[in-house]
Image 1 (tube, rainbow, N blue to C red):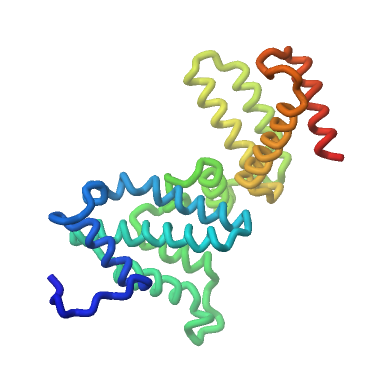
Image 2: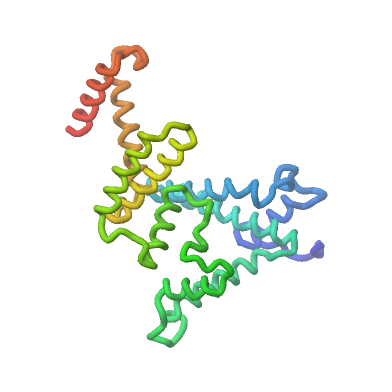
Length: 258
């Protein structure tokens, strides 16, 4: 235990945040909820906070970004504290490791060798020392499905496993649609739909379009048009036939485009 006379770290410092987490996780006097958490139970919050950071950036809200970055930093401290309790590593080890990695990957900045290999070559060299030697090694399974599909495809493409142009993925989409139509069991339909989505991501990659951003924008357009339909409708939507709904949808699109 620290000496009572020792000066506590400032609450606005990283050391202060580390102290707060240590107190929250204290076996005797800590917070009951915080003491129960594990890597697995905290991981969903870590992902959520990263998305909230991205959302604040997209909205251009710097005050929100400040708060969300703090929430994301808390997640790093949280995981590091759990690891420290297990004797695996602590927050200093995390910071030391990322500092070493960034210096190692930027020898043109932190070294004197102008002929140093590029970022991708350095990352490949790091992966070569790992047990899993597949070209697909290291693609996190917890990534959003669209993003992970794109990363897996890019890795495969680096070793030549790829269509030469966008026509290949376009034909594959038509093929997968046919296989989806032919599927009979729920399991087969789910598998074929997955293959179809994977092919759509492949087409997006060849067109140099971020499928995650494209789908997000499409969802935003749908939401805007749907709200417009709700405003135009004189009856509850569930009381309208499909033709009436389609008419309202087209009106909404025209109104919003004008």
